[in-house]
Image (tube, rainbow, N blue to C red; front, side):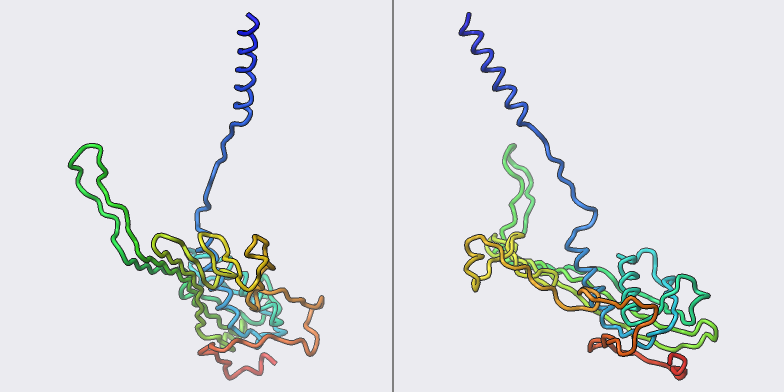
Length: 269
């Protein structure tokens, strides 16, 4: 009788322990892949950073975004980056059109991603079922496979006098791109590299730096320094209503084409 009672107690204790250790974890994914969002946002950062807004320094401006289609990818991010660049170059942004002397209109020719892939090997093939229970498809056999994804942004802005309607400045069309490349060799991979990665990765893990022995033994190295850019690095702006004399204004990067200041540029002085 005692043996049966002890066996029941042990069984109950084991069952309680197993029930206490059971649990579930809900795994979810965001509607858009993080890689795609990084590619798009970096392309936007690089494109807007090429525009020199210094002709509008010290002027009251209204940012007109009506030309942006509602389906433009990351429309809000693009508007915020352009507004930040205007402020960084000394422009005085107004929330209401009638309070500004100049209207700056923003448009986007292209914002999105492209993908290109290539494989050396045998693609997956589906076969008709002859014998019940046997597989009806041959899996992919890739000796080498690569997939390249690119983010593209093409933007342009121009300014005109709100009162007279005269054009005073245009940036010209500015284009920039970002990239990420995934490579598989004999089924091993992906080996990932690109502009949105601080360093090369293998299957989502950063590859160790052979020049740093500490990383070979599992010690994390210092975080990489992001590439410099007018909208991606920390910058201090003096707490003043107008920029002080001699405030350095970042110059536009090389590669901007079509920029022009029209005949009444004296209005901006």
